[in-house]
Length: 266
Image (cartoon, rainbow, N blue to C red; front, side, top):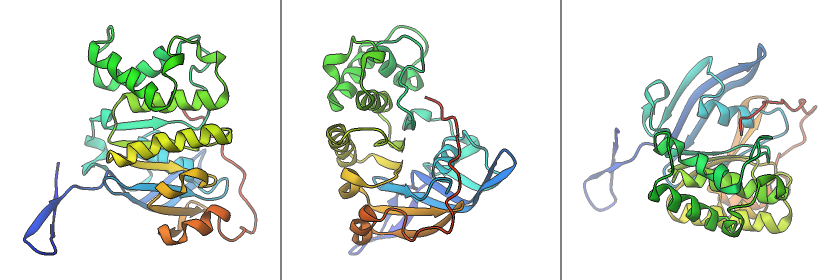
């Protein structure tokens, strides 16, 4: 892993870790239609970045490009300083998809769904002691440990979302990517999810998330990147996040693009 030397205030240069995500000049198409048009996006280590914008602005496509689910037609992508084509350490990433479909129609218990988050860290076979501890810890973090043996189809929408987050946390990721984690979640579960994310941020996890509104996550966000028509319209620092919480998309667009059904994997 490469490092970039930077000058300290009162001493010699110190090594700085490369960003968790470095997307530069990214272009991509879906169904032959350009969706990303030169997106620049950086997520530093320990930073929480929110992607905002109207439906069809390219938010979900941007994070799917970071995950490699949408191939770039132009630009570059590095993860933790490694060009995407050479990146192999997928256990460093955790992903929470947009839809609350923890089992995707397949009968499964909460334990089984969350245990899937350990696949990047182990070979196929029974869960080891370390894996079982990570699964239980992840469920404790989202307040769902008491439901570990329950079928996921018995859960509410907010509980489904918490299980999906636990699945991502079970991988013990350094970068957590979340697509609309608050969508369809009641206020109580939104607060619970915010508490979970707060603990991850305090532990130094980098976070990239798509939001329709900042809601209870607003205090955790370092930068808000606002997309419009597949381009970065502006980047807002914490001083402006209160205004964004009330007006998340800025000025009204002339005509909102139709929402793109991306079929995110669960």
